[in-house]
Image (tube, rainbow, N blue to C red; front, side):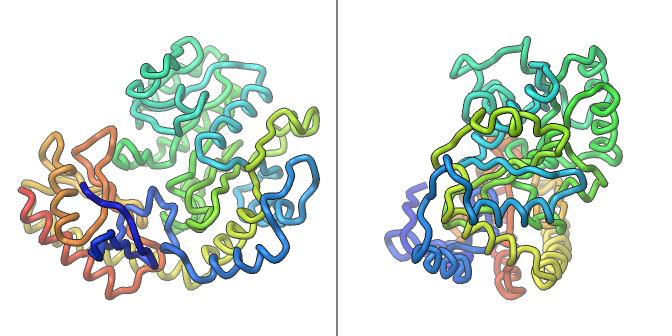
Length: 382
C-alpha cells in the first residue's frame, strides 16, 4: 500500500497527497491517546526546558517519579521498575531477570507468540523469526499451544523452567481470547513449580481491556509485567519492566547488570507520566467502557449481515480481532478498509484475523463513522 504518513493528529493520518485515514491499528497501541496528544506534547515541550535524555549512571528525579507511579498502579507485589527503550529490550530484561532469580535457563512461551525482535525476545517467539536469525534453541526455549493447560503442565513438571511469558491476549496471533480459568491455571502451575510468570502487557495494557493492566481482570499478580508502546504517549520511546521484590535480586547485587543509554530517558519519563495520568482518569475508564459496548453492538450487526464471511469477533474491551472465512481474509478486508479511509492491519501470524484497535479516547461520532466504513469495506471484500 503506497502510504507515506504526512500530517497526523488525533486518530487521523494524512498521506502525502492529502488523503485521510482513521487509524484503527495505532501501531499496536502506541497511539492509544491519539497521535500528537496535545497534553503529552505540552508536557514534553515543557520538559525540554529542564530535561534531556539523562544519564543512566546517576539517579534521576524523572525516572524515580515514573517508577513510583508505575509501582502504585501495578498488581500487588511489584516493587521495582527497570527501563528500556523498546518492547524487545524490555522483554529481554524480563527474561534475564527471571533467569537470575531462579537460576534456571529454560523459557516457555506459546505457539505463535510474539515478544519482539531482540536477542532473547525473538527466541521466545514464532519460528518465522527465530530460524531467520538462528535463534531457535529448543533446549532453552519451549513453546506450547495457547489455551492448552495440560501442555503447560507437561513442560513445567520437571521444575527446570525459569519463566512462562505470555501476552494476556496474543496480539500478533490474532487476539485469541484465553478460555475461562486458563491464565489462572498457568499462574497456579508456575507457583507450584517455582517458575516466574511474566505478563507481556505491551499491547493489552494501559486501559485497552477496560483495566489498566489486562492481567488484573484475571485476578493474577504476575512476577514481572512488561509495558511499552502506549506508555510513550506516541511521543517519546520508553518501555518498562515491573518486577516483584522477590525477583529483583540482581538490582541489589549489581545495578549495572543491565544498562541502557536510552532506557528510561528523562523526556520519555515525562511523556509516560502524563500518559499514565490521562489513562488513569475516571473519564478515560468510562470512555473505554462506553466504546466497548458501542463496538460490540456495531460489529455484531455487521456480522449478522455477513455471517458466512465475518465468522468471529474476538473482543476484550477495545482489544478486537475480526476473523474471516478465508486463509488470508484479513488481507482482503485490510485493502478495502484502506480504500474506504480506515487503517488497520492483518495479524502477521494468522492472516485470517484483522487487528482492530480503536483508540481509547474516541468520540461516539468517530466510532460510528469507523463502524459505517468498516461495514462497507467488509461487504466489498467478499
